[in-house]
Every structure is written in C-alpha cells, then in structure tokens.
Image (tube, rainbow, N blue to C red; front, side, top):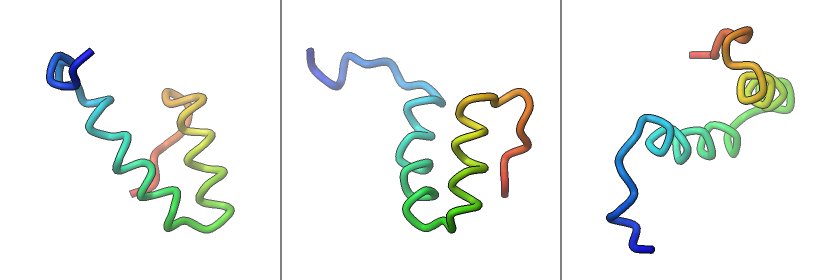
Length: 47
C-alpha cells in the first residue's frame, strides 16, 4: 500500500505531535498524555 493512498485525517496529523510531546515531557506529563489517549472524553488535554 502506498502512503499517498491513506486519506488525510486529524488523527494522522496529531501522531507526530504526540510523539514529540511525549519525548519532551516529564513523567507526570507522560502519565497525563497516556490517560488522554485511553480516555479522551474524560481528560482535559494539556496545552
């Protein structure tokens, strides 16, 4: 499968941002980010 066939989505766009956030986060921030991934509707995202 060619990458160009994958339709653009907000989910695909947020993944590199998320990886970057995790790489530059403290342990507490990582826990918050993981919690957000598991329960996005319950967790306010850190800005």
